[in-house]
Length: 386
Image 1 (tube, rainbow, N blue to C red):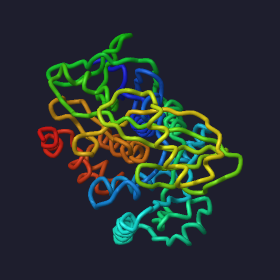
Image 2: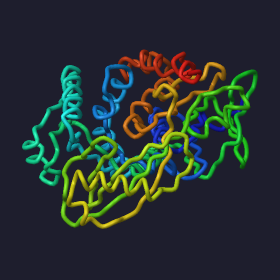
Image 3: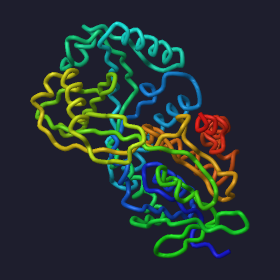
């Protein structure tokens, strides 16, 4: 077979861009296809939080995967800056998870003990200590859980830098390239059909989460993923109000460079509507102002919505689709796509270029992760039936 490229990556969100970058680093001829523009969907709408502890509340594959991925970002930020000149805005100033009630405080204390026992840094702060650390917070809080190792990046810039880095290393990045189907031969995927023509490859990576169903349907394969709409808005302030990310039940506030503040996010399962709604924004604004009263004087910037790709059992699909040889899935990362992007890129690229042994060398414990995230896992199928 004459190949146009070694591997085709379908989907130009942060997951696809990360995989393309890691493949290009390994000398693979890779072509990334994005139907719209790079980070045009959920990856561009994200607040960019690296919440390996704040998002995970129990031991397991997702918790391990999240912490390993978060640990890759410092080196990645330097690497991309040197290679492309682009700054992904990595900030590691920590997070405060705030409690309004005694019940919330008790739950957060338990979270803190879990993270300490798992070897992570976590500290419960009294109301007085919370106010000392972040004077702009409401005096009504019952305390907060301090997670000093949490951070955030500029989400659209991360995807752009990964794509630019991949291109600098020889990858072909194609925007507005809509994949209409997969090319198969003797039960194996050998490339893709686009509106402009065919691209033949030795391997294909499917990283277009919410649009994967229409690509897989003709092959009789189903990887259930559904959208969860999330609305956010941004404000600007002339004087810094916060140093750290602040989170409470149903609301987070992320301070960005240049006096910009992102407030999010709603969660509406099953909606493909990407228009922010007034009621949702008013509710978010009320919660944010309650947390940080001085936000009442902040200047409005804009509002937007994104569609997070969720799976029935809450874990992503990462691995070869056994019913379609030559087709590798990396999708369904829900609200943790930014956080998990780097470990996903390393894991996928290692498997695709060197198999399980290479994955284990690049990411110790990869075998357990691949087993937990395998596309044909029974847990996902059971969740669909329920």
